[in-house]
Every structure is written in structure tokens, then in C-alpha cells.
Length: 554
Ligand code: DGJ
Image (cartoon, rainbow, N blue to C red):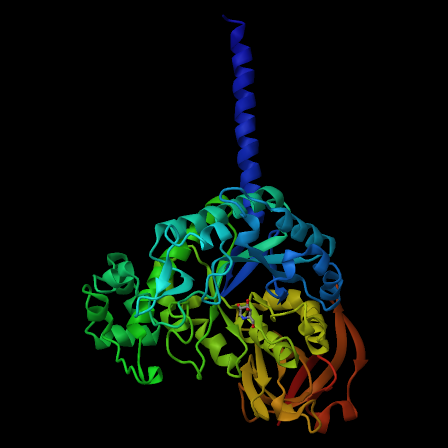
């Protein structure tokens, strides 16, 4: 047997080599697989090893069911300076028969996105869409005994899968895992797909909570130990409304849901006069457990960032059930964090005029900002600058980009300017050297401090659309007296923040563009182009970029 030894050595060496190669291939693909990474206070989306800013748009719900319908739309999206498309994957179309998957539409989507140099964020239309269940396959829809529905207080079924069913949850998790396994196989080395939205606008509509027998038993039973442990461990960081509800009920560490969070005040004659916070907390926990399991099953196959979008509470429908009760509203985001650790980001679908409030509420507890749905017009364009400049957003995405929004000039112009300075934005995320202002809802000016100066944006006397429009400016501080600014339709004034007795003047002002990340100056601005010889003027027609150097005098 002596001559066998070298052969065994060779075999062992080959095996070790194989293991090392596989391990290094895996670790390489793990580091290049899209993931989230902290930079200072910001969270960045890392794609192919580099931070990525998603200038996105969301397709309407049925668009991706037909590649032919989508064909003429792709080039329009690239022309509007998008780099990412949010596109639906429908459960009923990928699993038409139980356990028989058909990924043809997904493969077509990947192929066409790549051909048009676009990335994708896929929206999993699984158990829920807009608080209802319309995307589960027909073999589920027609079998409500095996796949049960939510019930209202009168015991009537609503067209919504209940969270109180392992069969519902496991069917969804199996399908989502199959989708993620397929994505790993066909996209694991290409990274066309950057993130997944798990479900769509979850929560129960038309009733503050599920009243099916299992739900009612759970509601009158003890609040789960895992939740209570989480709340105690994070007591000092909880979002104020949840903290207050728990405090008002005496910070109990065990008891029924109503003992721990208080009894809702119910006015059966007027829902608006009722408070259903405990019902909402209860539903949030059960949605979180269900969706968290679906997301975890998907991540076990292919681990890319996963987020949830939210039908946010509006004044005209401000009670749970009028908006989906249990979805990840900021007020119950802690409950979601406790119940669904596999979800990385909670997002608002925001078309409301108090957009900036929602950004603030959705960045509590370190939640990264990603806007999956918003307006796609001039208002959306301004909000894109706001989210990137003020909140270090990962991405911004108007809804219905294949409709009117896709051709909206203001959005395309804003995306053009943002994409030029994207490397600069990404470099400055999280370190306090970037901010933004937005003039809207009648505000004529706004001032913000950045670095050594206060920067004030004022409506120009002739602005596009007057105070009903929204305009924004994004400021990056590139040195002690230096700024790069993107803005439209406003004048920008400077005052000294560090030594207020100093007067501030313009040393040099250039307009220009960034090409391949390098500044290409155009006109040198002075005289009439610098109002009162001390401010910057940004024209009303377009978002443009200026670089300014300041000096001081007394
Ligand atoms: C919000 C949903 O999430 C979208 O899928 C879409 O239905 C829009 N509403 C329609 O405005």
C-alpha cells in the first residue's frame, strides 16, 4: 500500500482545493450579493461591492404580467434617468398549480431589465395586497376551509387571508422560498434584483382586528412572552405612542393584550371617535410573525435586503380598519421589529402633503428610508431631493412610472441631476455634511445650517406653479467654505453660522455638470446671475448644479 499514499495525498489536496474554492466562491458571492451596510449614521445599499442610490419608479400592478406590454416602456424609463424599477411578481402567476412553479415571467423581467441596463426591486404580491387577498393562486382562493379568511365582528368572512392559519403562512413561505431559490440560481452572480418587498400594504381593512375564533381566543389570551421580552429590553428606545400606551396601562410585563396595552374606547355610532390601538398592536404582531416567517424562508434561499411598504394612516380615515390595521405604521414599528427580524426596512407609500413628517416618522429607531411609492410629478421630484439630501435615503420610487409619471419632465430632470452627483451623495451619507430643504405647502423660504453657514432657499419672484408647487434644494458641504448645490426655482442666501458678526460673500460660483463623477464647469456666474451679488439663482425650468466658494468680511 505504500504507493497508495501519494494518491491519497493528491485526492486529499484536491478535496481541500475544492472546499477552499467553493468557500471562497461562496464568500465572494456573499460579499457581492446586495446587502445593507452602515456608513456613519446612514444605512447604504451595497451592490457589487459599492454603495448604490436607487433612482427608481414603480410599475403599475398588472404591467409585468405581459412582457410585450412592457417592451416599449423600458427605454422610456432609461431615458428618464431611472436606474431601478420596482416590479410585481404575482403569486398566482408563478404557482398556478400547487407546487408547480413557472418562472417564465420572472426570467423575462430579468432579461429585459438587463437589456435596458436597469436593476430591479421585486414586489412579492403574496398573501396580501392593499389589505386584501387577491394575488394568492386560485387553488387557494377556492378552498377557504384549507386556507381560511379573516372574519369581522359579526362573523362574516372578508376577502383576506387570516394570519391565524399555518396553512396560509406555510403556503406563502414555500412559494416565496421557491422564488428566492430561483433568483439565486438565475441572478446570484448578476445582481439585477437588489431587494424584495415582502407582501404589499399589509393589515386588515373594514374591521379593527380579525374576529375569527382563533384570533379572538388569542386577543383575550396573554400577550406573547417574546414580545414582552423585546419591549422590556428596548423600553427606553420605543416609539413614543407605543411607550405611552404601555406606560398608561402600568408597564405590565405580562397579562392579556388589553391588560398590557389598555382597552380601546369604542364608540359604535362613530368609528372615528373610537381608539383601537390595542387591536392594531395585536394585528401588527400577528402580521409581523407571519410575514417574518415568509421573509426568513426567502432569505434562507437567497439573502438580499427585504422591506415592507405601508398604506399609511390619513386624516380622513384615521382609525385602524379604515387604513389596514396591523401594517407597519411608525406607531407600531417596534412591534414589527420584535416580530419580524428578517425584515430590514419599513417604508411609507406616501402621496400626502405632509411628506416630510412621514420621512421623519419612518426614520425613527434607525429605520433606513426607502420610498417605494410617491407622486411622480414636480412634487415627487422635490421629494426625491429631500429624501436623499435630508434622510440619506436608499432610494425613491414614484408609483405608476409606466403611466404619466414615467414621462414627467420634472422627475426626469431631478433624476438627471441626482444621478450626476450620486457618487458625491453616497460619499457624504451619514456624516452630517449633506442636507436639503423643500419649499411647499405655501412656505416661501426655509433655512438650514450645514457646516459653517446657514443656507436659506427663497422662492424666486417668478416661480413655476407658485406656492402650490414643491421645489427642493440639496446641499453638500465639500470644504469649510465650499458647497455643491442642486436646486430649482429659488435663490439661495448664506449667513455665517460660526461667527455671526461676519458678513458672507461669494468668492466663486460655477454652474456645470458632473460627467463620470468629475466636475465639468460651464458658465462662471456673477453679476445678474448672483442676486444682490450675494446669493445663488437657480432657474425655474430645471434642477441644475452649482458649485460655490464663500468668503467673509466685516
Ligand atoms: C398602493 C399600492 O401599494 C399599489 O400597489 C397601488 O395599488 C397603489 N396604491 C395605487 O394607487
